Amino acid sequence: MTEFELIQTYFQRGAHGPSVVVGNGDDAAVVSPTPGHQTVISVDSVVAGRHVPTLCPPEGFASRLLGRGLSDLAAMAATPRYVLLSLTLPSFDAGWVDQFAEKFHHLAVQWGVDLIGGDTTRGPLSGQVTVIGEVPEGQAVTRKGARPGDRLWLLGQDLGGARAYLEVLSGSVAEHVIWAERYWRPEPLLDLGQALRGQTHAMIDVSDGLCQDVGHLLQGAAQPLHVEIDLDSLPLADGLIARFGRERALEMALTGGDDYVLLAAAPPDRSFDAGHCIGRFEASETPRISLDGQPVPADWSLGWDHSR
Amino acid sequence: MTEFELIQTYFQRGAHGPSVVVGNGDDAAVVSPTPGHQTVISVDSVVAGRHVPTLCPPEGFASRLLGRGLSDLAAMAATPRYVLLSLTLPSFDAGWVDQFAEKFHHLAVQWGVDLIGGDTTRGPLSGQVTVIGEVPEGQAVTRKGARPGDRLWLLGQDLGGARAYLEVLSGSVAEHVIWAERYWRPEPLLDLGQALRGQTHAMIDVSDGLCQDVGHLLQGAAQPLHVEIDLDSLPLADGLIARFGRERALEMALTGGDDYVLLAAAPPDRSFDAGHCIGRFEASETPRISLDGQPVPADWSLGWDHSR
Image 1 (cartoon, rainbow over the protein chains, first blue to last red):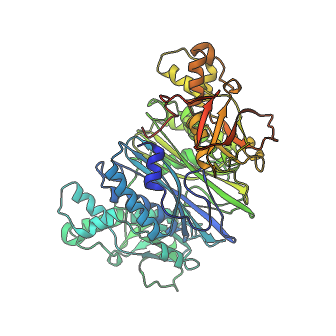
Image 2 (cartoon, rainbow over the protein chains, first blue to last red):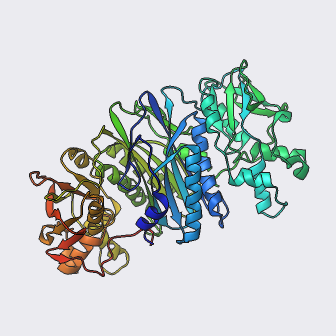
Image 3 (cartoon, one colour):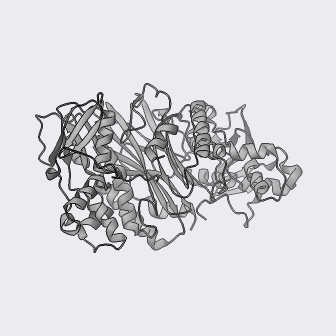
């Protein structure tokens, strides 16, 4: 099967939405922007042996690839519109590609993105998605803008599950179904992100690890801020404390990453049913984070650095 | 150096244009579409060992990656605006990354694209660019639309040079400076592509090989067409016939790929200074190509298939 046949067989399905002028199969795709909206764009890679195990199941590869990508749009409060897929395959295994494509298309429909382009090539397994969304003019929520007095909200499910699943993969603990869910099926909080337009000063998704991503909010603030995190308020993944003990469970929740919940800095008069208020921002001499009044341990790896 | 430091050091330079609302460094980039325009998007991969030698010089990697990507926008008659870069590096070699980034930024400025996002990770060397351009509403030129009576135009430089350079790499012939240029520094024909808005019925860039890309124009046509190519009209790369003889030189020109010239189907009353009229389209029972009246040899690999 050639690249063209592979794309035609697996990646050109169904009709495009009315805003797609030229879809998959030309030199480039052409889309009509919605008047009064801005375009929001992100790219995200999943490399086997780095972000997922080398022997990666096709459905998990599809879910993590598209879920991680769309989580970036959720964190900007954008409405997802389109996706382009670049796929590098070590060999052409029809069963693998078929299952990958089936899952990818299913999730694209579920999450409201139209597959408008991409390419395939041969090489070590990796995938890249370019995700494209829209926001009404001026309503994107960036990482910049946290202010003294803001509350730190965590919105979505719980923390540490994906990190715990890595322990399962390494064979050091037994399987726990929730952890596998968190790792293999990250759920981008698209509706939630859009509902937060105009409600928060700053937002980011937890991909690198809670502490590291709070650090990005601090870097984006106009003045140095101190964030005090209340550890008892953190929603931990099911079974985390029972299996690892409280101290290690908290470390996994604070540094593990891959949680794809949303972190937002919101004015103190706001409250969110879908979330937990886990801390507060105050003016500071230098940007810093504390955990129940203590500084972050110096030996903690602050999140998952994909370049290491 | 972490992923964040690497991105900050090498890939966040200079100011963005006025249409960039949020640039590099947030969860996603935000841009303002130009009123009355459509958005044109393509992704393109360069995988070491597949599209370039495994030991690839950083400047060549940057040039081929961005040049190939932007050639797709040229072929749609789009004005380039933005690029996002996904880079997978086997190790962090500061000298390599520095030279890559220097070249990439230089070409981005030269070709008029603003680097608004991307990611880096560790793994076998590969790069992906997402290129984004704009066209006035309805003026994109697609692969579809060739008609009986149209002339086939080849616009830009010459054919076969990049293919000849692969022979240099394999050690079977001596270096020829023009071939290395063609291979390592593909020049996307951006101004030419835009000048062809409203002038042609269909357009494509020659990336897979002339015959194969003419085949894409045939696939896109509303009715079966026969293309007769006049071999004497083909502009061959300097030194090609002298080194390989006419027959092999023509095969390289017709099947080699990576030439990044533009192929257009234009009405017979049009003429283009920057091009060569190399053939004509006529109605046919089935889509087919002939070369000086002969069918394309059955044993020719029709272009470079990156999935094989």
